[in-house]
Length: 192
Image (cartoon, rainbow, N blue to C red; front, side):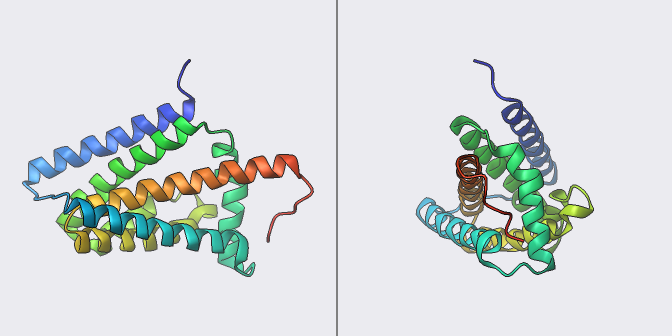
């Protein structure tokens, strides 16, 4: 069985980010720690739950004001078609690859070198794919501040890696579940 295109693109892309981060960290002599495993896993899981709850609130509960509509449109028009048929292996591998690659780069290299503000803004910018995703980029930058705080409080990268990977797995898992539900009951309208 061949890996899916999604899996290949995500793993290759995130591996490139991780390699850039490792080269940067070593070349600059940056000190990057994992932090205490118990604290890292606890903080990471807690933060992932908070991020997922906020994400669910924006997608399903918030009033359809401009920024909420923009995120919902991105969800329905871009994210759902990409991830709706992702396999369980795709979800796990993509989430783990993103957690490792992006956190090594943004919290391990950029944040250590330039601070949490620059790392968070670049993290948000990296998730903007055009005018239609600007609000999503702002949301990702806000999450970047949270992930940066986790690195600080947790004493290293483990907490943000866990938070990022678990959040991505929950978000992609929700997309898969939501898409399957819509196929069974297509009369549901878009919430905007």
